[in-house]
Image 1 (tube, rainbow, N blue to C red):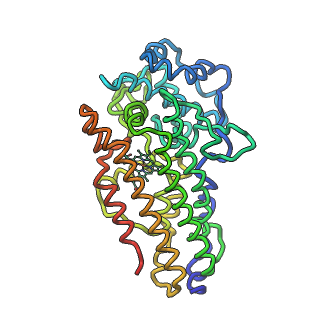
Image 2 (cartoon, protein in one colour; image 1 turned 180 degrees about the horizontal axis):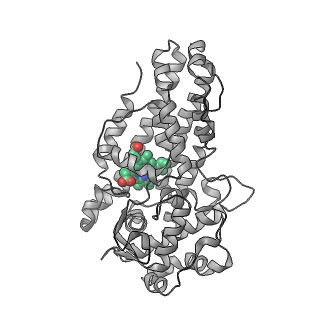
Image 3 (spheres, rainbow, N blue to C red; image 1 turned 180 degrees about the vertical axis):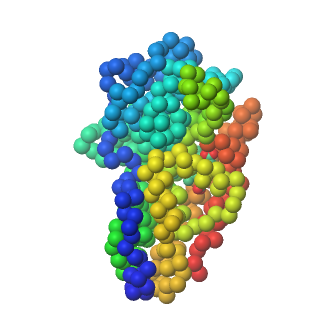
Length: 389
Ligand code: HEM
């Protein structure tokens, strides 16, 4: 097997498409320069303004700011986070009664500009809301759930903070998957022997096990009813919303899905690495559409993984039981993650939706807007179908 592996893992010419982590490599910038002090202030005031339903009346009075003075990527990312949070706060402020169909120029114009600068969409993405929305409490400590604070929040409070910190903790713990994927795909240009393949596959299965436990632990401090009634309503996307004052949209309404873990690179990376194929369905086409909401570096990395992967065919032709076992462990742990995730979606969306009868239709529709229930089950079953016997 060693020689087969070595022969098949040819030196790759695409290593410049790799990334080092899922999270930004340095702690996100916390405040914008002084000329944007109104926005820094609004971030602090947002929970109270939303509670008093006064956010739209405040934001409407603000001037349209020029974001071209924001040069560093860190500042641009923070501006995108703030402005997309403001946009969602504006649209969904009064969500129980109505969703607004337009965003005023003081948000719409700079949001559209900064999204273009960063090659992203003018909507609250998973990357902005989760991965770029934190600081360490103890700067000498690790990036881990009990050492994190959140920069932007809607109503705020423990449940919202814990929900976001859960995602950050998962993405941080999953960071080792980037290296494992690089090594297993030989994106680093190394040739692997069997024991290295087993070692990296074991990293993958262990990490999947760990992040499943972090996901399950979301329950400890994020109450499903609070999630459903006070957090998720603001994360929902834009359905035919006009960006006032943005010339390029020509006053035409635009739509974007809301932020969702489905925009995380982790599971698409694992699916690609393990060679898992899902049969065409509504969720799959939606997930492919969602890739456009990841940062371009994540999209590029995924494209490389999808085009270069030979792992599954190598395992299928291998007669080395240790390799097959460690591959199967990965499939098993991935299916376990998907099972836990499915339970979470039932507890956090489906059950509250049936409890609050006016929200029943939200029980089948995810944050991003997909008809998720039956397809999440199908994707878990399809994962298990890839066990090699
Ligand atoms: C309380 C926590 C969570 C809830 C309530 C939740 C909910 C959902 C929902 C409703 C969907 C259906 C698609 C949509 O409309 O968005 C979905 C899909 C998905 N979510 Fe989550 N999610 C949670 C946490 C996470 C985490 C932490 C991750 C991974 C980082 C994740 C990764 C995914 C993926 C990859 C999909 C696509 C389906 C798949 O490939 O299995 N989710 N999630």
